[in-house]
Length: 281
Picture 1: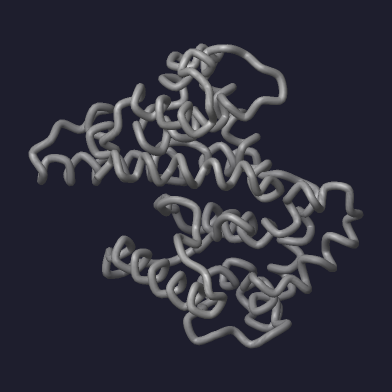
Picture 2 (picture 1 turned 180 degrees about the horizontal axis):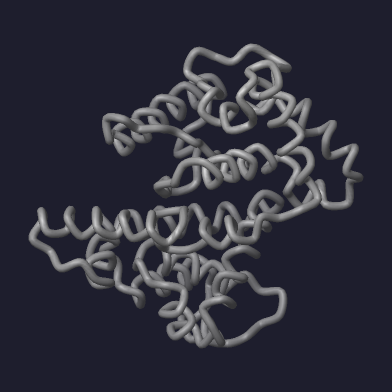
């Protein structure tokens, strides 16, 4: 991916924030020295969701490994061409999962492969069939979970458990667990977010509430309102005059699909995020 990467990781020590900071800082420093460049390398701050095991974990692994072929540049390619691209793609762990290359020390495919049958000798073959058999399909339920604002992927009981843990953490910090808490943690007022986006794009704030065909204005505004103001999709719809929360989700999906192919759009988004990161303190 040109603007981001995906990781499926287990955190027994609950130190994800420290790990991600170390990873992004160290890799950016190494890359910049090697290529004689300056500035940030990855787009914005990382996002994370807790994932329920078994089928949800397996589906998420498939989604990540299919990312290289579920991009606009590959849409018109045949299924066979997409499979060949997937099997030759260097920047993915997929080849290690299916036995095409040796897994690095930090990669442990077994928790995923163990869900593909009891016989170790057949697991890689079964996983490959599971992934490549879905090249022409989209897991809409998983995509909805990934695009949502709640930090969890799983069934209702699992999401209920996540909410309970969230409430307990909120109590520990003596804060009320509601939508306001999430907004306080994000720390940026919606109007401030929209002003920052408008300034970078050279428009007035009122422009966000006007429907424009083939415009990324609302898409970028909705994405930043979610990320920095902590608004739900329904709340974003009210802010931007969009008909529903589902339509907001469609706007955000449009932005995600466009970013890998539009360098100018990526630069604009980076400037917006830098401005809002400073607001967030």
